[in-house]
Length: 414
Image (cartoon, rainbow, N blue to C red):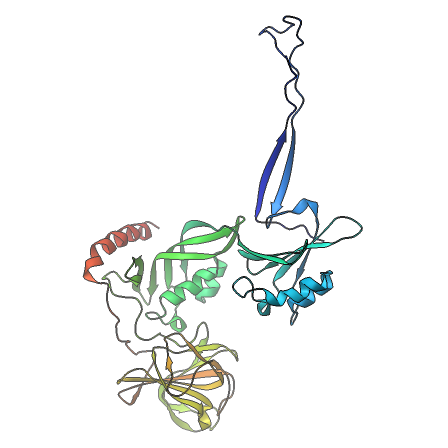
């Protein structure tokens, strides 16, 4: 049995006996007019420890983890909940708690009365480190959803890349979510498969805490990423009309196309007109880029567009082809399966999962063969210059410049 921690707050209850009737006295002590000196009793202080809105010290607590394939009704039944409460689980509105979305590995806490009956009184399901659901079982089932308060602390961190962005952020003792968020911000401008030793970044951001435990990364306010000797800045600026990351000239860091259709893999074969094919054992053009990745890795559309092909394409295996505009098309080959809602004629959005890495067709192992055409001719995706998006409107430039200058000074001082 483990005692729960976190989300604590205290209620102080003080009790004192009233002064005795007729008490009086003098500054020097003694009696006055026959009255006894004033006497008081010691104050008793009772500290009621509350967690999840429950006086936790009044119960026996047990912490468990949801097992693979385990339903919430199974958890309640094994814990000793009454049948009526179990049956009413299905009536809980999805907006409060979707009983179908209990996740394996998540924690739940059982509260029993500390007597021979050991009546199950509360069940707390932890949706995340900050979000939890309390099931009240005193009379009939009653459900409440709570969020723990999140504290944000501003940080300024710098990391030099020696092996990989994720690995070096982790080795620096920083939250690896910082690497993921930076890769999202720079997904249009930096090829993270081409990082080199000596590349570096400095970022100003919020780190989030719950109960003094770091739980994630909040907003990144500004970053400088040095890649191949070139500084790439991303400054956050937003108002009621626009929001995003902008370079020093007010151009949107977001471009029409992502630099890569998946995250944190490695390039196993480059664009070339003379490659010895690993299956056919002949020299032939390979007008795409191969990304080696585990089977099932999500594959994203590099830009908005319309699906023109979805199906099996012989040596290319399962393939999705997208027309982005009158100039550009992209294709994604050897997929294990297709993304939800991906069909010929359907619109897809930049970053939407259109399939998953596989090894279908003429393939020696799981990877993505990614191809791009410009005006009908194959081009190297790694050297492609993505069309720009709209810059920051001129009417916001003065305010943006003020934000930018403050952040540049802070980054330079790092």
